[in-house]
View 1: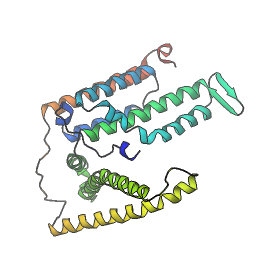
View 2: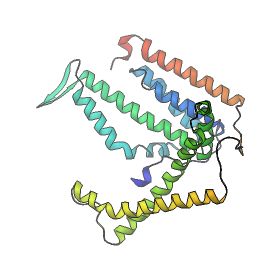
View 3: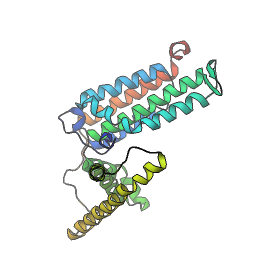
View 4: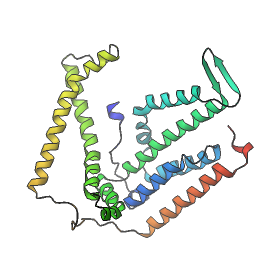
Length: 274
């Protein structure tokens, strides 16, 4: 499961989405994720599906890489679906066994919630796969720049997010190495109940925290040794500038929003009922 976590990873490729301004990708991803919660109908999700898989095809990121990020959230996804399936009432009863009851509204809500979570992870993964952590940092800082007038430390916030994204793959690799080392020494991490498995994780968590603090200290010392001072007056190696393709991307996203929300809310009831 450690290898299945794809957050913070970048997939280099020559595609139209890779070349977009990172601000466009952040804003477009947020609008796409918000749009998933603005409708509950088959036509709306059909438009969202076509848009998402179209972007994945254009990005040239293998679909298996995107789907790989769904494995770590399988348990969360399953719990969410079961809660919505059995605890949502409304409509005709489809199945009633003991204290468990499945209704039409419960089934519809469970399916839509599962689609939302899956598409949410896929959309966010596509953004990180096509954008380097440095570009993400610069984009976040530029998007939050107006908050500087309110004395909000925008540069520091963006820097922390960038460091966190960079350290995720490193810490995952470190965790995998520590687990393999403990298994080679005879540690049993798979058998036993939940309490026994939690205790077996202690020999992994302790060296992992020690390694994380050591890396953080080394990074801080390296930044101080180079006289790093962020914030006002700091220049960029690659300034962010909007181009024609970025404007066209914004227009495409806005057209998607209009089409998806329109299809999801205003089509006749008998077309979209589950």
